[in-house]
Amino acid sequence: MFKFVYYLALIVLYPFYRFHFAGRENLPEGPCVLCANHTANSDAVFLVLANGPKWDIGIIAKEELFRFKPFGAVLKWLGAFPVKRSASDMHAVKTGFSILKAGRKLLIFPEGKRVKPGMKSEPKTGAALFAVRGRVPLVPVYIPEGRKLFRRNTVVIGKAYMPEVEGKPDQQQYQQLTAELMERIIELKPKELQS
Image 1 (cartoon, helix red, strand yellow):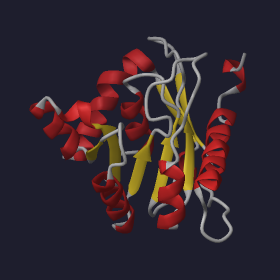
Image 2 (spheres, rainbow, N blue to C red; image 1 turned 90 degrees about the horizontal axis):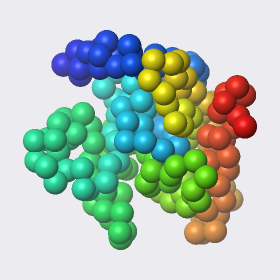
Image 3 (cartoon, rainbow, N blue to C red; image 1 turned 90 degrees about the vertical axis):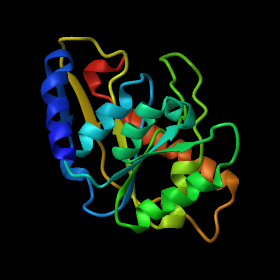
């Protein structure tokens, strides 16, 4: 059923966004934390499509999206689960680790909210925490900013890598790992889109 929805989304959305996925060979077969920049509501759709038709994902999404129950039910069916952004949500953390332990991919937007071009980004350390404690690789993904209809939009999937840590990382180390992750994401931006 997921494959049907996946290919239906491709057929419906492709005429408008003309998306292309570069670097899919970089996606690991096993568990990983798939991380992307976040500038638009449709980014989650692009990230799911970038992963391909295999239903091996869990998606962290803000709890506000689940308030309309029919839509929330669809999100849960697609593998999404809610997180409270205003406080430490241990239930969401446990859910994230259970997804990785089951051998699935965890999809996260490290910035936690949409960050328009020119806005200051304040990424959260959750992706780094999941990767380090779950002992799984991080996979940076660049999703085009300011997408335009009827033009080619290339989503770039970077190489998976294990975050390098010594001993038990503290909050400062997690922040450094997160900054490195965001740098890797931005470096994937195609040269023709760089200003």
